[in-house]
Image 1: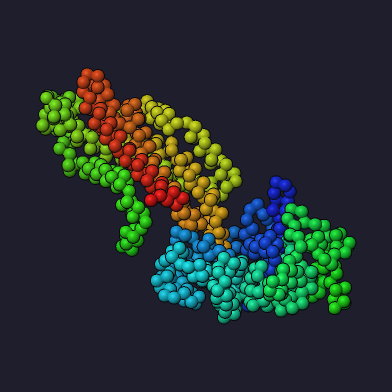
Image 2: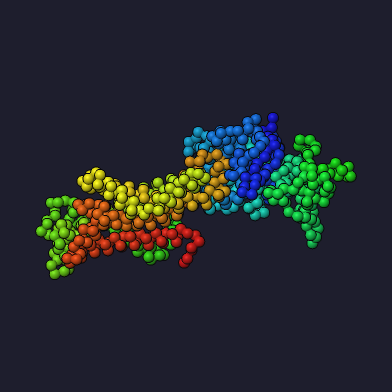
Amino acid sequence: MALLEVKNLEVKFPLRQGELTALRDVSFSLDRGERLGIVGESGAGKSVAAFAILNLVSRPGYISGGKILFEGRDLAGLSRSELRTIRGNRINMIFQDPMMTLNPVLTIGTQMIECLRAHRRITPAAARQLAIEKLRAVSIPSPEARIDQYPHELSGGMRQRVVIAIALLTDPSVIIADEPTTALDVTIQAEIMELLLELCEHNNVALILITHDLGVVSQVTQRAIVMYAGRIVEEGATRRIIDSARHPYTQGLINALPERTRPGQRLNQIPGVMPSLMDIPQGCAFHPRCQLRIDACQQQLPAYSGSEHARVACLRVDEQERAQ
Amino acid sequence: MRYWRLFRKSAFLYRFRKDKVAVASFSVLMLLVVMSFSAPLIAPYDPYDPVQIDIMDSDIPPSWQAEGDTRFALGTDAQGRDMWSTMLYGTRLSITIGLFAVLLQSLLGIALGLVAGYFGGRIDSFLMRLADIQLSFSTLMVAIVVLAVFQASFGTELYNELALFMLILVIGIAEWPQYARTVRASVLAEKRKEYVDAVRVIGLNRRRIMFRHILPNTLSPILVISTVQVANAIMSEAALSFLGLGMPVNQPSLGSLINSGFEFILSGSWWITTFPALLLVVLVLVINLLGDWMRDVLNPKLYKE
C-alpha cells in the first residue's frame, strides 16, 4: 500500500463571481521514502494541492471531492484533533520564504520546543536537547548558541536550515516542500537542496517537492507530476519526463530552459499565458497555446493514457509517438 | 539577566536616551509615581487620620503668602488637611485607578479582539457591532448612569467604601472597545502572514496559535494605546470625581480635590483647586508625551533622526 494516496481530489473556491475550481481530478500516490516532484507555472494549483493534502485549504476554499489517504486513513474525514496528530507530526511542510515562516518574536528554540511538545510527552529540557541535535543535523554551527537566537539574527540560508530542522523534529514520514529554495540566492539554493535530499534519504522520509524549477526536480526527485490549470497533464519518472516529455506543455517547459538555447538566441517560450482558473477553456485547458491542437482538443477533455505512474493527458500523444 | 543585557543594547533604549522630551517626561512621571506611592513615608501629614486634622487650620494659604503657615507648604483645604500630603495621597489613588482600569480594559479588549480577528465571520461581526454600540455611548455617560444608579440604590455609605472598585470597573468596562479594535486590526494583518500557516501546519491548537504566536506580534500597538489609555482613565476618574461621582471626600483623588476646592475658588481660596489641577495636568501630559514618543519609536515607518 502506498504511504500517501490522493484520489480524484477536487478543491473549489466559492467567490462572488462564481465558483473557481483550483484542483480538478488530481490523483497521485507516494511510497515510503519516495521523492516526488510537482511542477507547474504559478497558479497551476501546486500550492493548493500541498495545503489540501494537510486539509488546510485556506478559506473560503474547500475540498469538494476526492480522498486523501494517508496510511489508509482519509484525512478529509478526520476531526480537527485527529488531524493535529498528523499535521506537523507525520506530515510536515516547508515553505518558500524562511523570512516569513518563523515567528519573528520568538527564539528558534522556543518555536522548536513548542512544536515538539505539541506532539510528544517530553520535558522542556529533553525537547531542547533534541532540538539542538536536529539543528546540528542540518549543519548549523554551534547550535547550542543559535537555539536562543531570534530569526532575524540568522541569515536566509541559515533560517531555511532551521525550518528544515523543525520539519524533521518529529521524524515525519512525509515532508512537503513548497518551493523551498525560491527565496534564497543561487549558491545557497544548491546547498539547501543537497541537505534536504541527504536528510530525506538518510531518514527514509518521503518528499513532495513543489517547484517550477525543472533543474531542481531532475536533481532531487525520482518521479514527477506536471500540472496545468489545476489538472495533472503528465506523470512519469523524472528522467523520462526530462529526456522525452510526451505532453506538449511539458515539452514546451523543457524547451524553454535557458540551457536549450544557444547564447544570443531568444528563449523558446510557450506563446500565451496560462488561463485564469475562472475561465478554463473547454476541452483540453492547454489547447489555446498548443501548437499540435486539432479541433477535437476544443471539445474533449483528454483522458489519461498509459500506466498509473507514466500517464499523460493529451489527445495527440499516440500520433506523436507513432511519428517518432 | 539576559533580557536586561539585551535591553541595554536595544535600539529602544538608545533612542530613548537620544530624545530629551522622552527622558524628561519619563523622569517626571517616575518622580510622581515614586513620590505618590511612598506618600505614607514622605508626606508630612496623614490626610486619612482624623487625629492629625485640625479644623482650626482650615483654609490656610500657601506658606509664601502673608497669612501662610510654615507647617503647610501649599496651604490647607477647607477641612484643614495639608494640601501637599493630600495631593500625594490623591495622586496615588488616581494612578492606581488608572492602571487597574487599563488592566481590566486590556484583558477584556485583547481577549475579545483576538477572538474576533482570528475567527472572523459571525463572531467577528457580533463582537465588533457590540464594540460600536458601546463606543456610541460616551464613557462618561455610561459611568455617570452606572455610578449614580449604584449610589442611589445602595446608599452613599456603601458606595464610599466601594468607590475605588466601582471606578475601576466602570472605566475598565466602558473602554474595552478601544483595545478590541486595535488588537483585531493587527490580528487581521498578522494572521495572513506565512508563519501562521507554518504553525497551523505544525499542528498547534488554535488557542496556542492565537495567544503564543499572534498576540506577541501585536504588542507594539497595544503598548502605545495602553499609555494613552492610562492618561484617559486618569482623566475620566478626575472628571467623575469632579462631578461628585468618584472618590469620596474622606479619601480624595486629584479629581475630588479639585472639586472640593472649586466651591471656594470664588471666595479667594484658589490654592485648593489650582495645585491638584496643575498636578493632574502634568501627570496626564507626561504620560501622553511618552505615549506619542513610543508610537513613533515602535513604528518602523517613522524612523526619524
